[in-house]
Image (tube, rainbow, N blue to C red; front, side, top):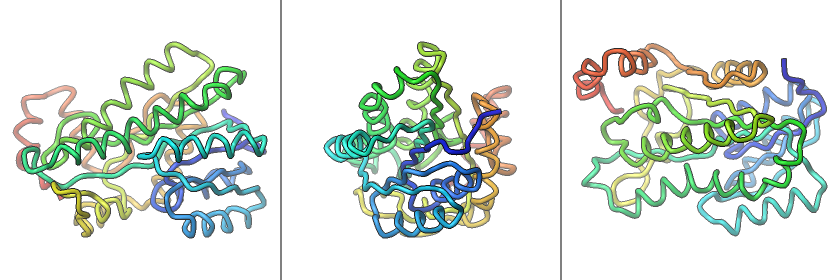
Amino acid sequence: MVEFKDKLVLITGAGSGIGEALAYQFAQKGTNVLLTGRRRANLEKVKVECEKMGVKGYVCELDLEQYSSIDSLVEYIDSNGLNPNFIVLNAGISQRALTFDSDFSVDQKLMNTNYFGSVYLIKKLRHHLIGAPKAHIAVNTSISGLFGFPLRSAYCASKRALFGFFESLALEYPHIKVTFIIPGRIRTEISRSAVLGDGSKFGEMDPGQANGMDVTKCAKIAIKAIAKEKHKKLIGGTELLMAYIYKYTPWLYYILARKVSAH
């Protein structure tokens, strides 16, 4: 089992949702937390709660769309003598629009936030990762990264790309463990911040999201997977059946995927 106590975890998108819930799970295990995200006020609140558990908390604003913001985070890490033992790539945005109703700028935005930002961050941290005797990266993908799904073309593409990159990384550097966290419908605000075809916010809670798994339960399952150094961990409810249907009876998947509500 992985040792968490007195280590340091860097979490992207730590101000809410799964990232926030994971921050509390790590803190409960004695792991110091470096919380990053776009909303400092949210991060500061999470930091206070983590520090109540007896760990050190650090906050640094981060916008994964902006490479200069990632550069600033790495500068913050180095200037403060921090050395993350765990990196949780959690930040991301979703989508609610038909493929041809989505402006190309939406495809770019999702790829930049969900994929390129995380890749750039990991490459900027290579001096920490390559030199460490052991490191662990947890990548929050999505069940939608396993297959295509209506109203999610850019989202599915960005999440699927993460598998290719980080599986390759893990094969090249055996001392870097990679765990893919693959959530289905989890009760978070991600659908509210999802983007429409013109780039504006969807602004609504999907019924499927509202009835999804509790985010704390999701985080508990995720951290157990990290502790056991599992390669992939599906998390969710009955919607996870689609992953197995897609794998073993793809013809049935195509029938069902057109009928399942995308909300």
